Image 1 (spheres, one colour):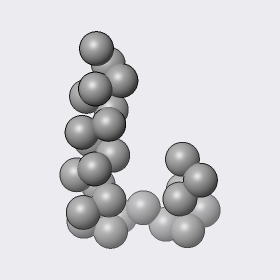
Image 2 (cartoon, one colour; image 1 turned 90 degrees about the vertical axis):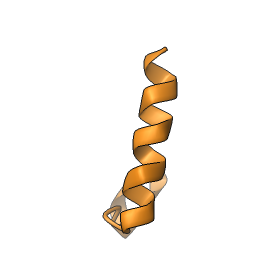
Image 3 (cartoon, helix red, strand yellow; image 1 turned 45 degrees about the vertical axis):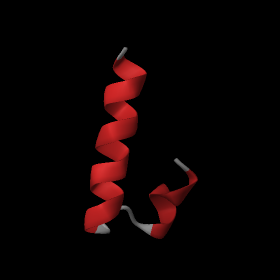
Length: 26
């Protein structure tokens, strides 16, 4: 499902610390 891919992508991005405080709510 798309959700699974999105979850994996979010984890990957989080690892790189790309997420900013504003996107943390996501």
